[in-house]
Length: 407
Image 1 (cartoon, helix red, strand yellow):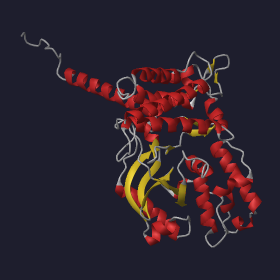
Image 2 (cartoon, one colour):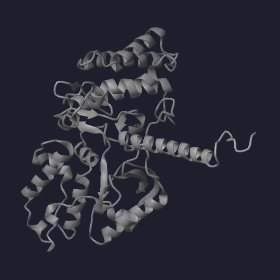
Image 3 (cartoon, one colour):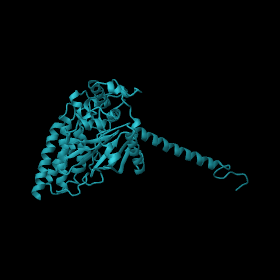
Image 4 (tube, one colour):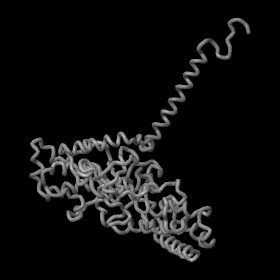
């Protein structure tokens, strides 16, 4: 090579500079991709769930309890008697803390929307530094304040008689702690919803009690795509095919119940196996209802600015964009039934998974009904829930009869 003639990299350092530039561009690209992912899905990168941190959270809760800052019917068992024992951390996601514990020998779940009690807005009547303002509030005034918090959380206007499950109890020595704790719970939509459904729905978890900003619900093993039947069937008293048919009928019952049995329809906007569980009798239970909304709140959520229909999709709840005013319609255009058929029933009743114990004719009918149910139909058409609902119910009952006869 002639003296002074540049090689492939040219003068010394040009290759290094090029490599650095390429590396910087690659890194910037990944940073941008991660930022876009987090913007689209704030919960895509959940916090690390550790026993050490979970124990610190509960220790801080008990410290506030001993200081009279907070109260609750589970605080003594958690902080003094040792009857509510931490077992493991299940997950931290979008700030929410979900822990498993044993309460007097039964497994329970402890939940809170935030880690620290101080993260929640206190009621205005506790802002009096003298500490007497809360004692002067009448029961009627307090009910009005509670009703306002429910309206903010769920979009519902409720009568005083409907607020019983949210009443803080008689005023006593720890009244300020009771009131502050109630206000922290009223700022958690799932707690408010489950409390109002208490005793009214076999498809929702009962609230077992609370301590400060944490509330306890029954522990049921969540579903998962890893299970061939989507839900654990260990120890089931019947075949998998029978269990699936029973669970499918219970899902239909859940859909009908949430659509028709309350003053407003309850919309499920995050339908996936992980948000449901089954009892021993194959009753389906919604175990995570953070994304469940009654009709007034659903309309408020959907009615947003848009430039196309994709801007009007709120998880599993869809609306249509009115391009004349660039606004999403307040009316949901798909239904709970359609989403259950798409996210749950398709997995069960595809040709590869349906039990051979079911006759070919019934398998075909069931597969077509699920397809009809999951298909949202022409753009803008309303959900055709009622006819396909009854068709699915009839076919599932016929499936159970065939399976029982085969056994």
